[in-house]
Length: 204
Length: 211
Image (cartoon, rainbow over all chains, first blue to last red; front, side, top):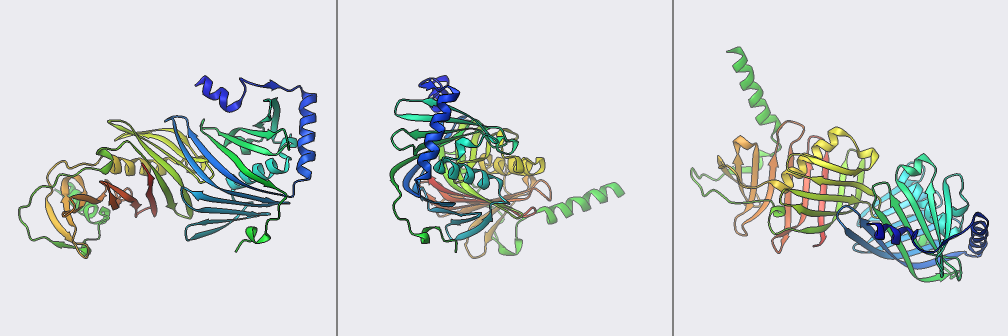
């Protein structure tokens, strides 16, 4: 169990950066994110169930376009579509369609903020809601975000972002829940600043 | 005498009002003696674990996601239900007469709701043929055999040709009445399971994604 926790949080490996060095990395990530206008990638989402040692794996396509356009398209194990268009969310689950206001759905609002903040690099600067520490893992920087806001702490105990050192984009995101379970989202086949049609983000 | 009369009236009202089965859809089999069926929940057979696409509808709430049900011992199952983006709604160990919650999403952590859920899972996981049915009916339309266990407040639907359990209905009071439907059997396990609590307007549906 100790080994497992170590491998998730990365606490057992890498070098924890000093506050000054961490500030420099945050600045670099933020600067790099400013030049990112769109991201397209495949993702693999793994939910680890700690009590029964099982995994639930989902896969799909991820699209982001500045400022606040996001499309999560799950393809496996079944189709499920989430479109975030500024403050509106559209969910398509088979034939059922839902329009959700971000203001009225707490979980969606928090996850939306985390995803957009991670891609835009602004999450690391959110000192009001998170305490952030940065570890140098060699080819990645690991940012461990501990929620300060009671609202987020109700659901999540920790968010860990893995930034690629080459371009400071997010390779992997881990959301650890209060229950002890965690969800890992890994990105692959990433295309940055390629043209993505606005039609991808239209809410019907 | 008056107390006995009151008790009988209450018993009669409970039998008629608590019973969630639509008896107008049942016709008498005409059999005065019949072979006592042997049946059990599909979860009591050679079941280890399965992944389900899951939805829960209650009042104005519509929750969807993926759940896993794993057999953890001869007398317990573990149930975890999370939404599509991975956030957990429920994580609990279920026994025949109790449950041990590991995590319950705060807005769903209501004692009365969890009591109904615990009873639903108790019926789903731990039901088997015990006792002798007092009556046999035929379900209009489908032709399924329906066995009534009066003392247990239980109805059991069976596809006699396939020898599979296709439904259960039970109640211990007006509010906890439950109807379970098992559909689309494949390799001895239903592809779809639907649990309905008609009195409180709750429906829980499981569609198998994989074993």
